[in-house]
Image (cartoon, rainbow, N blue to C red; front, side, top):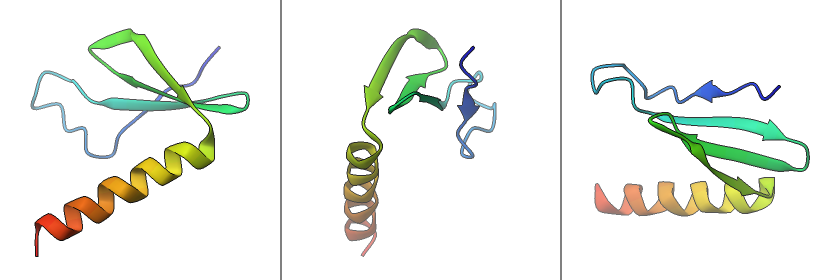
Length: 63
């Protein structure tokens, strides 16, 4: 059984929709809680690179 973890940014004020993540063998699994059948599987290094890229973009946007 896959153990899904909700994002720390999930506050429930938007109807409970959030991003969830789980470990799936050699892959990280990501899904949106309001569409749980759609699951993105990515290698941990690839997911880490994506998150770094998103954070860097967000940091540049706030400057």
